[in-house]
Image (cartoon, rainbow, N blue to C red):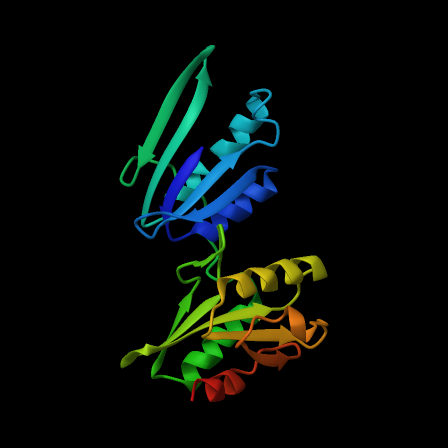
Length: 216
């Protein structure tokens, strides 16, 4: 199944992984996010299990501003093509959570109060990292000067392996306007950090004031 989506991609990727599916992510020609989703053994056999897992993604599409779905389906021993797009009637899933954690929600709330001239965008457009994409947590953009824009990633309560892979993607993307908020409990070697990234250490809560000072 191929999904071309604008927005809400991270929830789709998370749902695919929870269902045990393989999900390859890339940037489309129009700037949208392209997800290639399949079952681990899809090349060798087709199962109802995969069909149900793939079907779990469809209700999530209702929350995407724009989407297009293309899938090859086995229907009564016949291989047919399914296509869905923006505006097609879909029974939506429960509304997606706006924040992944209270840590993120608290930072956004405190930063908006502290820096009223800056807009906070949750889950901005993904950044190209080699053949894949990386999804920042926030974009911070000055309301009256769009050239003053930073990406912000909160490296908090994740496994060491997740942190290593996340930092490797940012190094590959060579993002220069990046703020990394790293939990002091996470031991991150300097060589793992993306070149040029600004690091703000935190304990239990991200200091919105420290982030504001980075912005200048």
